[in-house]
Image 1 (cartoon, rainbow, N blue to C red):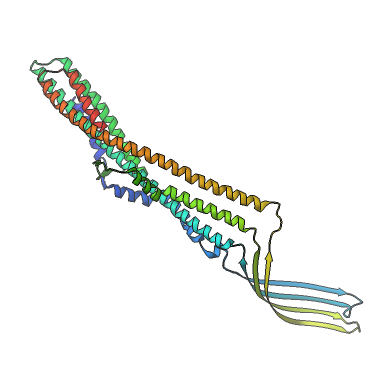
Image 2 (image 1 turned 90 degrees about the vertical axis):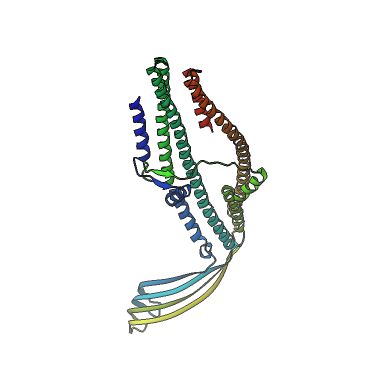
Length: 421
């Protein structure tokens, strides 16, 4: 039996101090997770893209300016007796640099609507980042307190195990003095072995919870050990359901994102409707034409004509306006507008469905919270009663007033009450 106790002690010691433990508060755990979480990193990058896209230039408000250069090469061979120049052979090269500017003057407010769309997409990107952060924080909180719960359950099993060990020593002492038999000692050892089994299982549960916490924080080493500094002390607060509902509607990030999505669908509908409007645009530019020609020919009089590196220069400028409107496209615009209107209704339905679901979840959580408060108070009284009962049972067992079965039953009742709380 001493070997079993030593084995359990060494196992617990290895699990707790096999590696150096770092101090870790809940705030530290959340900070670590936020620094290393991939989903937050992806959401932040997408939000950064949406922020850069939120620009008047991308929306199409600013004019575009293009620089062009054309190099035109030509060869001419004329043989026309009826022409003033019946024969002509020439080679020409022309360089035409130009600058053109174009701008949309009116397009049914599509530019303004596109800018609103880009602003809304940026807000959605920011909301997705907040949702990712919220999800990571929730996961870390759950994982952190899961470790604390497993630690507390292990502490209770350690206490019960110590009681079982003391009981064995007591029965061995009784047998030495002829006051107890082997049956009571065997029962004590059986209880100790059962408690030892539960203890080892709980050790594994604790290590699993620790590894889950490391994974949630993004720690690459699953066996990295932390000493958690927060505790399970709980003082239940009083809440009003109406106040919680107001806070939920004001602060729920999912509902915020769905609200923004609903706004985006309205903008998309107006964008599709704007395609019915005419588009008015302006174009302006300058073009410079420089050409070089060389060749030879024959005039109608029979005289020879020589063209030796003749150059020509031309400068052209223009300012043009244009307007266009689609008169018929087979009903494509109409279908796109109708689809956008349906998507707007879908976005509204998604918001209302989510709001209803959150209201129900809040009410269920609130009811469970009140029930847990009452259960906590009852379990506290139950634990106090079980603790007193165990203390009295131990005295009565030593006095021979109860047998080992009765004592074991009371001991298990104490364990159940402690774990329940």
